[in-house]
Length: 127
Image (cartoon, rainbow, N blue to C red; front, top):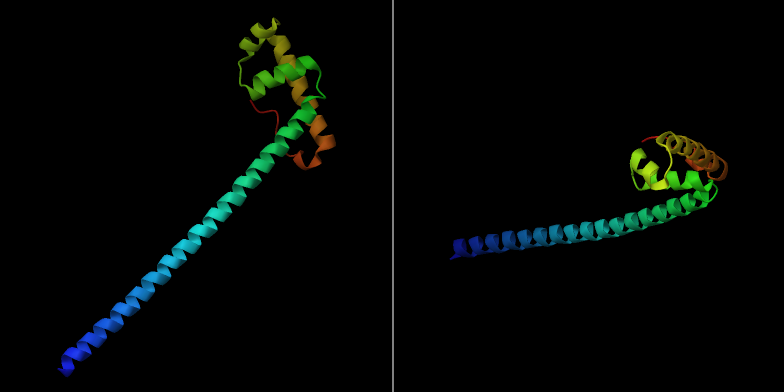
């Protein structure tokens, strides 16, 4: 009888310990998941704010460009159109499109340098 009580007590102790360990693991996973969700939410909010700032800065700087430069810049660098498409749409030579684009990028970069110096290391000349 004593042996069976000892076995039962050992079994009960082990089962209780295992259940406690499982509960702690589950709680840790839930806490980690909560932290991950909060972190993800904060990161999404930061990204939205950064995106908003970039859009605001872009709109501000784009207003400073002459109309032809702004249009070519938007069509090429924002909408990704080919030079030949832009030339056809605007009814101008491709060389004129390239010229407007080059000037627009230079002017855009100059305005960024003056108004938003924290962005001076960004490269706006890549195709």
